[in-house]
Amino acid sequence: MSSSKVDDQMELISHFYPHIYAQLAQEQVSLGEKMEPRRRRKKNKVEGRNNTSEVVMRKRKLLSEEQVNLLERSFGDEHKLEMERKAKLASELGLDPHQVAVWFQNRRARWKNKKIEEEYSKLKTQHETTIIEKYRLETEVLKMKEQLCEAEMEIQKLLLERKSDISSNNSPISSIFSMEQQHFDLGEFGMEGQLMDDNMFFVADNQSTYITLWDN
DNA sequence: CTATGCTAATCC
DNA sequence: GGATTAGCATAG
Image (cartoon, rainbow, N blue to C red; front, top):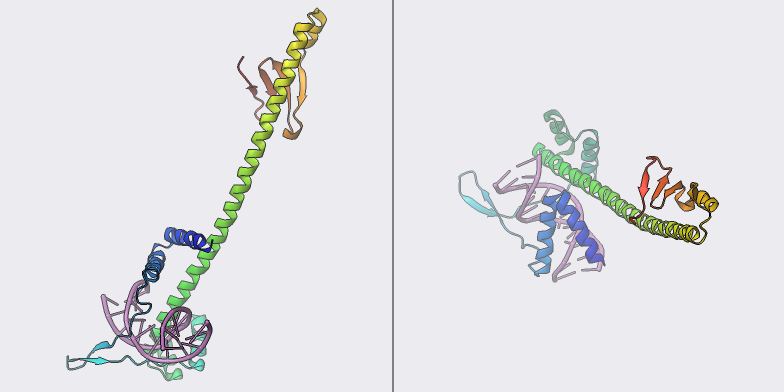
């Protein structure tokens, strides 16, 4: 079921981060259609000073651990890079100030990405919690409906018993007695009520309303 | 060897 | 400043 989980994630991403979704979706399609897994390395066209274009392999050197450490410490202090700090760092690191600027730019991008991922996983957790709570509440509603149904059946049963008592014993005394308010305790519902007549039931809830239980 | 992750560097 | 490219390292 990991695929449906992925689908869920994709759906969430598509909702909150359409751009990321587009990127991920594109990647998935690429893999699905067995596209070339990775683009071939291209030679990079670079404009020369004399306006003639030449083909040059882009050179790239990874920064040393020491250089990265200093850059990271600097980034920790402040994500933005002032001219002064850029020049100072560059000379300390033995790098071109432009390289320092690029490093900060890339670092900010990584940082932002990380933040987005953190936010996403937080939202995902919240979402899952909400789904579970929703399920719990739905179950509770079902249970309560069932209880309500049982209680109504019980009331109906009692009323029918009373009715048959009245018809089988027609003495004035019992008739008067039968007119007295009868008390019910609905136990599980935690509420009490009084039967007012054959189809009205006074419920002592917050609203203190009369509830018509059924139509005769 | 290939696939993949990371990231310096470039492009727009 | 975001998107993309491509050099490099390395896991499998």
